[in-house]
Image 1 (cartoon, rainbow, N blue to C red):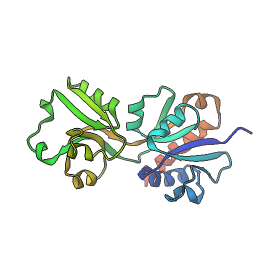
Image 2 (image 1 turned 180 degrees about the horizontal axis):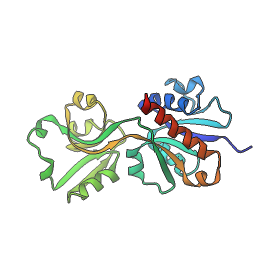
Image 3 (image 1 turned 180 degrees about the vertical axis):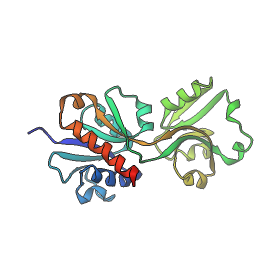
Image 4 (image 1 turned 30 degrees about the vertical axis):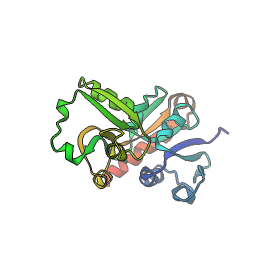
Length: 220
């Protein structure tokens, strides 16, 4: 009997949206999986041939790319930032909708026009995406890599602007920032390790199960 298929799921806000999708695909996690207070990282499911791991969003792509997990759920922002050739993304899952945006303090934004920028200093955990976006417009981007508390960068003088994910915009507003430009629309994708997809016959029907789960959700 082959080892269980391992599916990597991101912690945080996507997890609550992922659980109903998993269940529609016939994968029912053990109760502790959805418990935010649980420190466990690997979980069983109602299927003996499938386990789940719960990791940081940016780490999902790495676990799958290097074969430690066979499948995963990850945002299109992470896929674009890392660009792993080992990953195949066959299904847009229709969850985790948000946008990757440039933001800055409200006062300078009132007189600012992104079309006039020639050089920008930006705090972000997306240096590759950010630099590529501005390079396409002939703008030089100096990116300062931060993994959290991005909204503090302008107020503490680290960088006048940030690039980060935005959903409701509440976090920006509470920290005196406003969106000035959208770089990309983001949604979560099912990703598969390419080698596993070719060598494990049990992965193909699982991908189809996720595809059907999305179709059911769209039809509701």
